Image 1 (tube, rainbow, N blue to C red):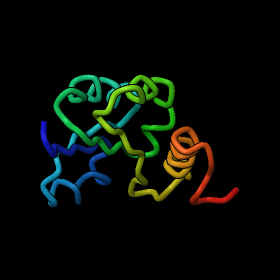
Image 2 (cartoon, rainbow, N blue to C red; image 1 turned 180 degrees about the horizontal axis):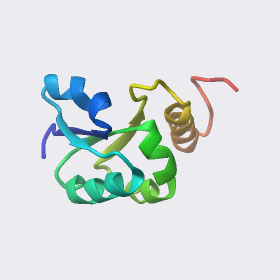
Image 3 (cartoon, one colour; image 1 turned 120 degrees about the vertical axis):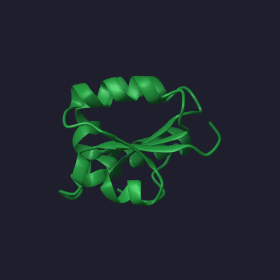
Length: 105
């Protein structure tokens, strides 16, 4: 599992990652994304998930917070950012540090 990185998202959003050598898994909806995530979670250290899929899976993704791996990161898709990934990062920083050091809100 050392250094293995994957991305889950719609076909157009993940295409560039495939060109960079990242394992890509296509999921057009949250149900498929959940299924793929369950299958690959033990095999990858870092899993990127497009924001459109990550947002409806927020509760499901909390189960991964207690383990060191995989680290699941929400990233913008081809449609741009919804702000969900930023909110997750802010929340994680506040939990870990007790203060918001990046966004100062």
